[in-house]
Length: 431
View (cartoon, rainbow, N blue to C red):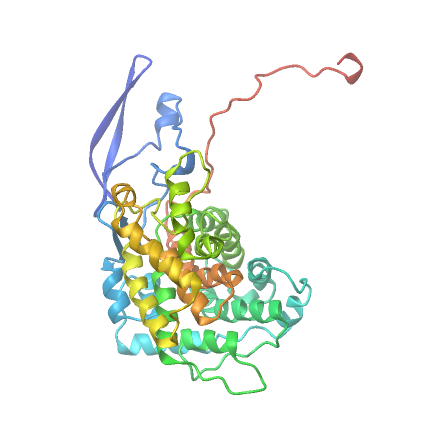
């Protein structure tokens, strides 16, 4: 629990109201306005909730000015270098890094839950063949509540644990099935001998006609992508999961809501939008034209993959992702790809041009992740599903934390009403 540090006094309409100021572990102090309406007949107005703390959380911390991201206090750079995705999942869910026995048990439970109910295969066939994989994932994940009745009681800690394990285990399988369905290939079952990331690559790219060997370097790169996207504090999709969960909805419905929110191009679709922009630019000689557009406020054009709403310094995830991008491209021998050449030149300009440097428009995690995923062979339509399966552990961790909060209240944002005042109904004949 946050400590009350002092009070802030609000003077309004001849009255003074003292509001507690709460002190977090790290970060800015927070004014507690929960009694503002009762004591002053006032609401606050904060479109986008960018200055509002809607919950207490001990999971993830971001300092945008310093370019810092912590999972349970651990810097993302350290985790990306020394940890792996499933260990990070355990950390986010439980608050501490596991010992060897705990990690082996956790990884074993996830591995044993990677298969989905066989009847879900038929569910996929209800979608059009050309459906976007995210549309399929929203439907299938929401439908999991119809298949796994033994983990729907949100008041039972064990059922919450089972639901968490199931979703972490099955989301890669569902994402891979959505991909296979979209390209007309048969589903590939999970393989327990592979790592979490390696298994996902196998399910996406293996075919029954021939053996597919997962390259460990690519599995490691995919594992790192998942880790960097595992959680990111109270963003739009996480807030959606919490808001849905505050009503008592089952966990599968809550995660489906998060996936639907993540689908938006301003959120999870940013890396897809970035790669599409690189393709639109086409060749290096056209970059000056687009740079000029980016600097012209009236052009309506915006460079995707640069800058971040939260990070006012370099995105710490981007530093790690850039290293992975260089390793993957070197491994696969991709040097003459026009899209890659455009990306490299844009990266150079963004790091040197006074306009970009002064506005801190550094390449962000979406800029590099799209390049890696395309190099691996994923179409842009799969970028957001990969983001979704990576973020599932963050959503579940936030959901579990919220359900366990004794002060939980159903989400109910207020509004600044600007419509018509009260008026009387006029019969249609008199209008």
